[in-house]
Amino acid sequence: MTWTVSWVDGLTPEDAAGNFDGESSFTWPFAHVGNWVDSLINVRFQYRQLHPLIRQQRFRFGGTGISEDWESIQAAVLEVRDTARAYLQDLGDSDMDKTIPCGGSLGHLRETGLILGYAIMRAVNNYYYHIDEIATKRHRLGHQVGDYPSALTECL
Image (cartoon, rainbow, N blue to C red; front, side, top):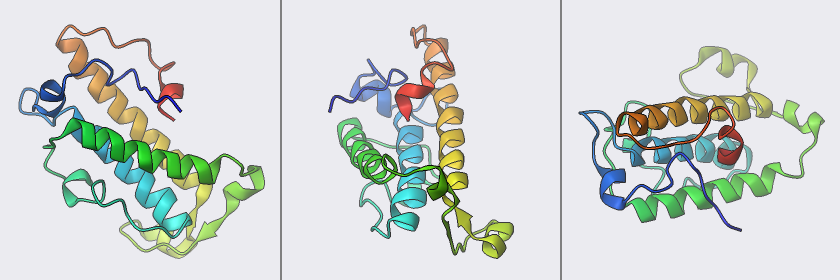
């Protein structure tokens, strides 16, 4: 399978890992959204272990915004997404109601459980937020990053 995401296409490893105007690097949100998919879909619903690279605290909410090794991060996010896609692709509408117990910081989810459809929407919303973040940074650098929201379909 060929995998490309226009919002990060064309970034050199040096540009991707560099912090931009004191903000997070381009690679950090990419790893961060991979962390969301991994923890929500792969770990909670498939009972898998967290990916060894993507699981790092620095890629979670409140992380450092610093990341290096663009090639390793791309490969790790691809693994995470392929694992989630393999699980999700054959599910039907009724499967979106699957509910599992949920700990964590959101009190209402501890009471109601985590619904698969909700987890997917949270992951999609997080992707879209960070696509916009990267597109904005790239636009400020004079890069052509494509039309949004059409690029969203490439990222899912």
